[in-house]
Image 1 (cartoon, rainbow, N blue to C red):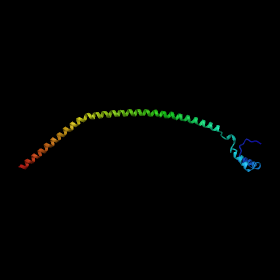
Image 2 (image 1 turned 90 degrees about the vertical axis):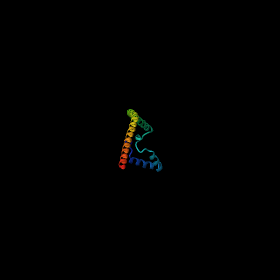
Image 3 (image 1 turned 135 degrees about the horizontal axis):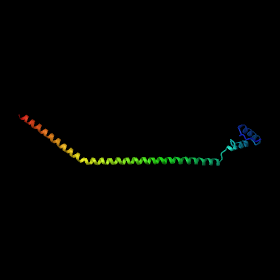
Image 4 (image 1 turned 60 degrees about the horizontal axis):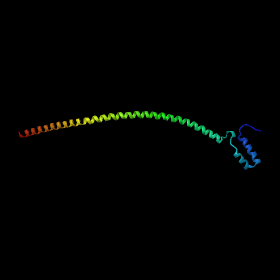
Length: 142
């Protein structure tokens, strides 16, 4: 009597007992160990596994292509930002060069003004000191 239902534990045990009677315990055990634990149709073959691997690889390739495309977009955006930043730094560098030039140009004038002010202060202090000394001499003589 053939049946299409999966072989369950009860039917496996009945087969094992019958094989023990007919072939002996060792041979029955060898045969039972060689049987699949499930229905033959549910066992994957190498071809099934290769087909699955091919499908997975195709899916991964598709996903990686999309990720690569997104990274290319991001790289493009970073290039734009870098160009703007570099342009901004170039402007700042140019402004600093102008300021440095102005400072160098004014440096001579500032040095001359400081020298003039220093002479004025020294002359004023010298005049003050001479006036004090003369006053002290006049007071000391009288």
